Image (cartoon, rainbow, N blue to C red):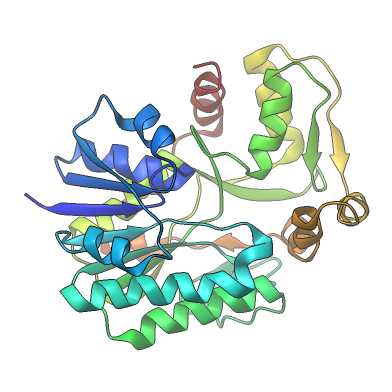
Length: 308
């Protein structure tokens, strides 16, 4: 039986990967810092739970030792990226290199930079101009230059069960509490989002097909959708009647005076102005159809999970 280690198993994509691997009959170790959260998510499933810190090389190496594949789905608060992301990637690379374990990296679209009006392919030149985009590009290079057997999967913004601290989660949480809700960015601009169980299915299929030649793989969402369309669907599903206002870049900049996390969001606001949209043709040609849950169904399941 194949053995997989999921780092960041309590996160939105990490937990979706765990549940997808369960469907595939894989022996799973779920690794995260918060043991209470691990138990809450997976105690009723045949998953080995390991409380650990990826910055502790001994704990990480011990967890990697018996795995055939490691899924790296850990994220960090923006304000920790510059100091900690390179250390995190270095620790993971060192651990898998010792054992020859294969590595799957869950990545975002930041390294692509601005690409307004064009679909971004895996061969599109990566030209980030933001600090966080340059950090993602550096992390990609570290993995590519390491010699480990790996693949890098690029996803748009997440939404789905357990996908907390995302842009849509911010809006959905307020709606579900019947509070005044806000949407981040211009509500008339079309953007792309991926339902985490769809993303997990796609990236696990890549791993199961042994596509570890060091390549990049774009995994797009169902389609693009405007903020107005999102709000209309959510209102239809929930009966929410309040007006949903817009959070502008200047509002985030002002909040950044008091909140370091908000301050770090300002430079990434360009994604709400010139959205990056992924081209998934490579995946579809080489692997098959990309899982695509409709936004209405994905929102229904996401909102339903918030009541549990």
